[in-house]
Amino acid sequence: MSAELRVDLDQFRTNVRAVRRRMAPAEVLVVIKDDAYAQGVEPIVGAALEAGAMWFGGIDIPSAVRAKRVAGDRARVFCWMTVSEDEARTAIAEGLELGVGDAAYLERIAAVGGTATVHLKIDTGLHRNGVRPEQWRAFCARAAELEAEGRIRVAGVWSHIAEASDRDDDIARAQFDAAVGEAWAAGLAPEIRHLAASAAAWHRPEFRYELVRIGAFCYGVRSADGPDIPGIAPISSLVARVSAVGDDVTIDLGSVDGYPSALAGRARVATPAGARALLRVDPFSSRVEAWEGAAVGDEVTLFGPGSHGEPTPTDLGEALDTVGEEPLLRVSPLVTRVYTG
Image 1 (cartoon, rainbow, N blue to C red):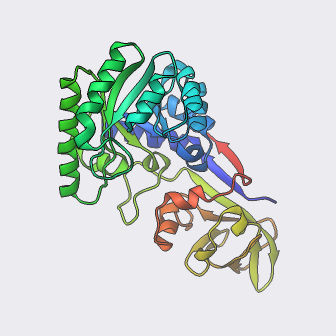
Image 2 (image 1 turned 180 degrees about the horizontal axis):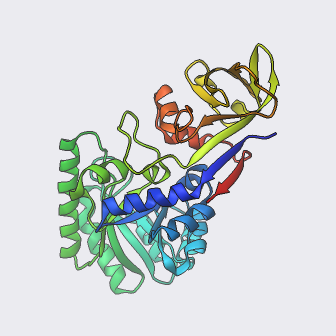
Image 3 (image 1 turned 90 degrees about the horizontal axis):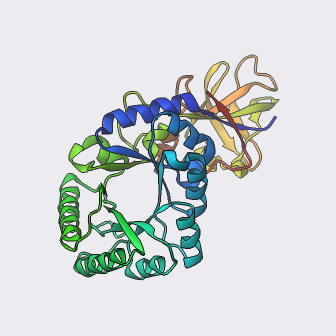
């Protein structure tokens, strides 16, 4: 009677379509980092393609390669982790596009052989790698030389923003626009600009350019302390079964399965009799407030879309003072994934 993470691919397609409508005419890059937020790269990419997605993005090469093998020529796949020469060779051979925010990394990619498709990254203030503004002109000049030699093709310019405040983001956007102008002045012709992720892209159309990187919202995870997003709902439910009934109810899911022990006393779960308090989270099981008629084998939902009284992933994240992705990402890969739709 093991626990299951049930993934509703129909809801995922609905979410992706809603995000794409909101972002149009910009295209949406569906982020598939961390095994598609622990929900499985291959089924997620397949469903997103059916919903019209044309871009995917992952941090690490293995996840990005998995996405590209599903997508084939139907979508472009972007990977932004700085990697070794051997990993870069694999990425180029697999048809990935690489984010480059370091001069030494640019040289490493150019030395691999073939023509690498790259997106140059400017640091606009988040300091999550990226070329510093004072080094950007020289970086673009070198990229133009390498492009003329046929060793790279510069497809895009990109950055991360801090999303600290509208004022800070406006400053970052101005820096980004200036960096794009310098890239053009260096003789480059990037066709793709991408700056914003989920929250900024959702609320500020001027940040969308040709492409936006959307992770959490595609999976139905709203921002912590943010409003619900019309047309979007969580796609996954973490379900466990009752293994014993006494003064309280024991369910077969505990902290070793990735469910945070700190949620004990802070969260409620959905049962056949409605919402009940989560009392304890032990290593291999958890305890829930009892209900009349509870029986071994009954299902208890620890998070989901919220339609039966269970918390959403973001509700749990807020209870722990973290983001809504964390409860998803903590679910052990040993917990069975079940796909519907």
